[in-house]
Length: 365
Image (cartoon, rainbow, N blue to C red; front, side):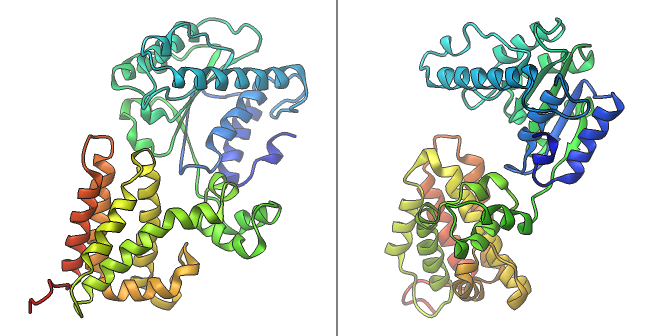
């Protein structure tokens, strides 16, 4: 048990261990990098290492402090789940109590002002049970704009007995004033080789699927471990219909099959709650199409089981058509939180891509 169990991102781990061994852990840290690569995991490990009874510069996972840390995390997660289920906005933030190790995550789409206010009220007090209190703010980019100034005031005068760890995929989603007050620890996508070795130990991923799972995970340990082939192919199916219909229409040989095209956009927009994940699947396919368009036979794609189809679609769409699809998905991503007709946006994107690739209406020259 200890830091040796952390997978990937050896430079980030080395940076954290150097801080601990030097006895100079900053009051404010920013862990930034892609989703699912271990940012929160390492933050929780650091919290334990700061308070472990047996280890210096590491943690044992077995002492009273390490066990207590797990209890606090369990209680935190239960409390967050209960608050997220509440339909009453006031009750979502009533009675907030922060432990010496506290995981702070969005209760709604945001980390609410009251959550940061509670952090501020206890940050300068002495820990109850640990040597050092640790607040881990996950998805820090989701802090409500009204709460940002409250957080800044804490970062401007770091508490003597508290460490704040902000976890965020993209540091530039945070205000420059926040970034400048935190020591940044950068995380990178985990190498496919390491993901493959990890999946080889996972019983639920068949050997023939491991390479696909590792590539689709795009460097994310969490996505690699959660890979489910049936769920993946089901989520991808509407995109295959969509891309095939767009590519055929863009080829200019015959008019587009508009019924098939609009049936696919209807399927893609059917579940509003999963629309962001739907868009991520589309982005992965577009990235593969662009790889094929640029690198040809040497392209390294995530959806390697689709390589023959990707070559055909890429040839019909061309770089211009792929770029048009990318612009449409970007617009859909920006508008997903608004009350807009998502299918209509995808319909427009498909039409634009068909004609960007050289398609024509039936009967037109």
